[in-house]
Structures are given as C-alpha cells and as structure tokens.
Amino acid sequence: MSRFRLQPAPAQEAALAEHCAHARYVWNLAVEQHAHWKPGRKSAPGFAEQCRQLTEARAASPWLAAGSVVVQQQALKDFAQAMANFFGGTHRRPTWRKRGQAEGFRVVAVKTGDVRRLSRNVGEVRIPKVGWVRFRWSRSVPGGVKSYRVTRDRAGRWHVAFAAVPQPIPAPGTGQVVGVDRGVAVSAALSTGELLTVHGLRDTEQTRLRRLLRKLARAKRGSNRRVKVKTAIARLKAREADRRKDWVEKTSTDLARRFDVIAVEDLKIRSMTRTARGTIEDPGRNVRQKAGLNRGILAAGWGQLVQRLEHKAPGRVQKINPRHTSQTCNACKHVASESRESQALFLRVACGHQDNADVNAAKNTRDTAAGHAVAARGGLPLGGPVNREPQPDLPSAA
Image (cartoon, rainbow, N blue to C red; front, side, top):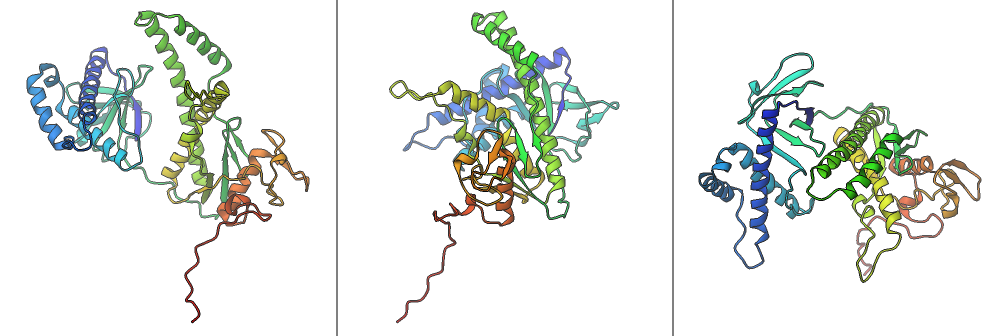
C-alpha cells in the first residue's frame, strides 16, 4: 500500500463518513449472519448470495440506497476474504466493527483518470458519490492502480492507500549476513554493534498523555468533554505510531540494502504479549509488570520490523530459534544464564569475554543463520539434546 494524507472539505468529510457507516453496517450484517450458524445447520450465505441480499436491502432502505454500491459490495468482499483467512488459520475470526474504530472502505475498478496531480504537493482522487478529493502528493503514486482504500484513524485523520505491489529491494551481492536482536530497552541490536531505538513520545508528551488519561477517568460517559479528551489522546497515540512506522520503514530499507541475509529470532509475539490477568478463581501474578512489558514490546515494533523486512527482502530473511541466544557466549559458545549480568552487559563467567548483551545475542543469531553451530540451533553444546536430521531406513541384514 502507498498511503497518502487526504484533505477533504467539510462536506466531503461528511460524505466519507457516510461511506464508512455503510461499509460498517454491511460488514456487521455479514457478521450477524455467520454468528447464527451452528454445526448441522445450512451453511451461511457466501459472497454471491450476500450481494443478492444487498440488492434487496438497498431497495428496501433509502438510507442504504443513497450510498455507493461499490463501497457496500467491497465490504462484503472484505468479509469473505476475512472468513477465508480465518478458516485458513492465518487470522482470527472477523468480529463486529464499532464506530470510530477501523473506519474505512475500499473502491475498485479505478480508471487511469481517477487520480491526477494538481501541483507539486497536491493531487486529487475521484471517490464515488463524493467527487474529487484532494490529498497530499508526498511521493509518486504507483502506476496501474486498480483499487484504493480510504481510512479514518481515531485522531480524525483521513488517508487514501493505493494498492500496488512494490518491487523488492535487490540484494547488494556482498554475501554479508546480519543478526538482529529485538528488545525493549534497545528496539533492534545488530551484530555489527549498532543499537537502534524507536523514538516514541517525548517526556513532555508523555506527561501530557498521563494528564489526559486522568482527565478521561473523571469525564462522564457520553459527554462532549469525554469525546474531546479521547480525541486528544488519540492524536498523541497517532503521533507515536507514526514515529514507530517511520523508524520501521527506514530501518528495514537500510537492512535490505546493506545485507544479503537478515537473521531474526522467531519470536511468538502474540503469545509473549498475552495478558497475565487470569481469572477470578485463578488470578494472575505481577499483572501490572507484565502489562508494562507488553506495552514495551508493542511500542518497539517487533512484528512490524520483520513484516516489512519480508516484504522488502523476500527470501532473504531467516527466522532462527531463539533458544539460548541471549545466554550463549559468542566467543566460546558456552551457555550460562549467569553470564548475562544485566540488560546491557554480557560477561562470560569462564573466558571473561565482555560485550553488549543484545549485540552478543545478535551475533549468535547471525552465526546460526550463517551455518555455524551454536546452542540455539542444536541444543546445549555440552551433552544436551541435539536436533538431528531424519535418517533413511537401512535394509536389515538377513
């Protein structure tokens, strides 16, 4: 996706919000239909049947008929794809959409003249039932665009994203391998010794965010004051997310251009960021500490970095088993948990090798990807279990 900032007029903004309401309404109807399905009943209607039902609903509802049929049909198409992803095991089951969250709609069958440039920094896109809407021409719009998606975030900003598959970044051809260790204090430590950190909110912005959160707790639900406070909080959160995304894009591009192979730890981020609250009968322990760790992991952009690396350098990203990478000395390959004295210092208890703990882990990840034997790949080096390749069955001696 190539995303640009939309600049709609007030009347156009109201029309875009109406499109979002139509798409959300149609999506929720599809969710409701599939929620009634149970084993033994007739299968829930598919995309074609839902399109026929949409035609009947538009004839019965003037509010729905006033909207764009393209927007409403694509909402059903998105739902069908979401269900296919769910049954494929790659995504969770699609749920209800709420007003103000994940607002947006998709438009297909875009023609060549539907996107045009007005000046150096201003362009226009034709949106059904809305007309020409201006957007900031921050970079070149990819050619041959057939569809685009209009979205509105919680901060009230509108964006248009043109669907296009970019060309991957070519490998430099130097044969260099880099290991990347992701952390909270240091977002990404490279085996070259570089320490990269996401720039989040500044101290003054964090102070203002805490003040706004206290104000939100005192605001009455449904009041205009609460809406204003939530919007102010969303703007700060959006600023933090923009900085994180900018860091991910620049870091992934730099790594794809400099190295032929990029080795990262195969971390199960969803499981690592799962809440520790527990239940009433079995409450969790250290819930507040675990919640802070979860926020730190998500703020570091672990998943986004690997995802963008796989997009920009397909086939050149290797995911390594993270077992013992932070406890193994890169100099002598000995495993000892007491070698990692702190978050930043790794001091080998036997050979005296000293290095940054995150850089040491990144070097172990790099060596595993390069084919060297380390603990994370084949178990403990001193008598522990070793992973072996399956051996062919030999004919028995008769």
